[in-house]
Amino acid sequence: MTYEEAIRFLYELRWFGTKFGLDNVRKLASLAGNPQDRLRFIHVAGTNGKGSTCAILDSIYRTAGRRVGLFTSPHLVAFGERIQVQRRPVSETEVIELVNEIRPLLGQFSAEEHPTFFEVVTVMALRHFEAQQCDLVVWETGLGGRLDATNIVTPLASVITNIQYDHQKYLGETLASIAAEKAGIIKPGIPVITGTDCPEALDVIAGTAQRQNAPLTVVPPGEAHAPPLDSAAFPLLGEHQKRNAAVALAVTRALQQRIPVADAELRAGLATVDWPGRLQLVTLAGGRRILLDGAHNVGGAETLARALEEYFPGVRPALILGILRDKDWAHMCEILAPLASRILLVPVHSERTAEPHGLAEVCHRANPRAGVAEYRSLQDALASSEQDLFVAIAGSLYLIGEAMELLNVSAAKSSDERALNEWGSIVHP
Image (tube, rainbow, N blue to C red; front, side):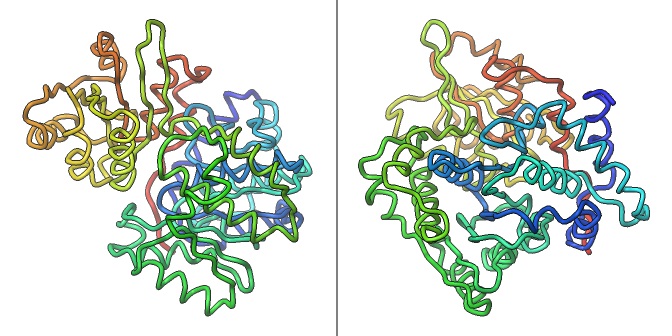
């Protein structure tokens, strides 16, 4: 099997859609030898900041000498980003080996029960982390938590970064219902750490923790400026990233007896965090600056707006915006458009893209003084913005991945690997 054939195999799994429920992934993991039973996890859920919090935890524990596996999604450019050990993405050779191991197991499922892409990749990751003898796995949920494929593990700690509106079609229309799905990762007696400050959501998380006899730590916003964050070097931009860091530090305190981390290791881990595509500032030849930020839902758009005002006061960037249609794109346009000098609207390289024409109407109403233009592709918009000294690209992590390739920020891969991020249809149990 070649790497291209392995990727094609994974791509074809998209036709099985996305199923909520744990029966299939438990069966597949069992057929694979239940590697999750021989690994230690920190399980991270939440609406925004999951990946960043995972990256911070990964950096701290690697600095403390642990061999750390990192499982996140979506990937920006290459599939291997999803499964990393010591921040080394799974190699093409390893992907081939993992696909060859797991493909025969799929013959033991009926067509109706056939595991989905995410379920297969979840078990591939477990096999890889066990083979790599990881001391700890930082384990990010995909969608929700309660019925997410990642929820077959019993972690050392359960983390819920925050609760905001996103994926309401699948998780419910209220913050309480969304919180209930995320709180589904809470396990009996296992510590829970959350940065949630919404009372409606926090009530649900606290109630679930109480029923599960799981000790709960609530990290208030002020912890973002408490020691060591008040003095430690920290490269990720934005107040929200300091809040994510505060949550990560609370996790390390909760696990200090089981996985000791010295203060110097904490500081060194914070100072060396790397998490691309989230308020990532790229300076090109000639001093032109490009700000890359996924900002893929309303909460993300609000965070980007605050960061622009904090770090670039008085500067109005050219805004390249592309959003998926299953997001609250109108509200996102209303938040971001007023901050721009001009707005360049593009389709996201996804079958779920919102059409630029629809975005244009909202952006023009939100900022009638800015020029609003529609482009056929991100590449065309980047060419049109070559004279702009400051450009912000936002609206979807899929768009950011494409931008990273076009700007040579990341080694280019085939577009087929970015297409692996597509969900397919979601089937409820």
